[in-house]
Image (tube, rainbow, N blue to C red; front, side, top):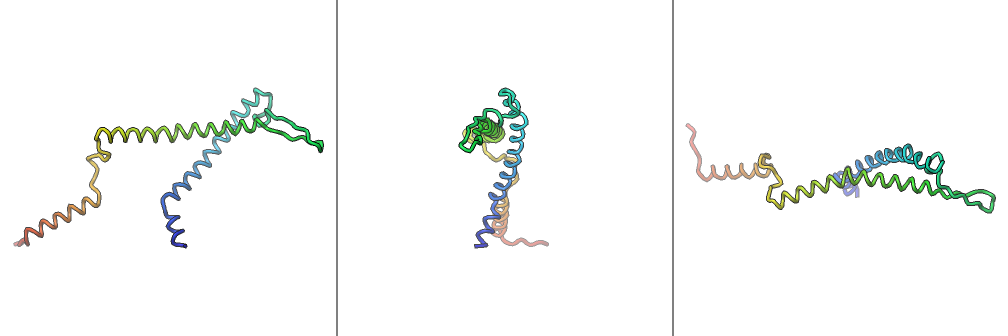
Length: 146
């Protein structure tokens, strides 16, 4: 059981996911501060309230003499925040990834190799060359060095 857990933790995906969660949390804080600091006061000013959360409130009297509040403004603020996150994720991540995929597909269709010609050989290619050289030297027989 511990061996399986160790393999799970040492996978690259777990680290990538952890980084994504941390970055996503930090990004969410930025968007939240933009919504609360900029958009809420602006929209709240249109409805003569301090912020959007206080605007568009429907007060319902209860039987105990208290008042329940239905806060439509808070829902609109959350919707604005969601849309801002979606816009940034789309333009910062989706558009560049789609562009890279499109370019790679166009190169593949045009017959351009994905690997450049000036890249160094891989370990496997080098070992194959060494093996072939050793085999050709062994086939030609031993050489005397005088």
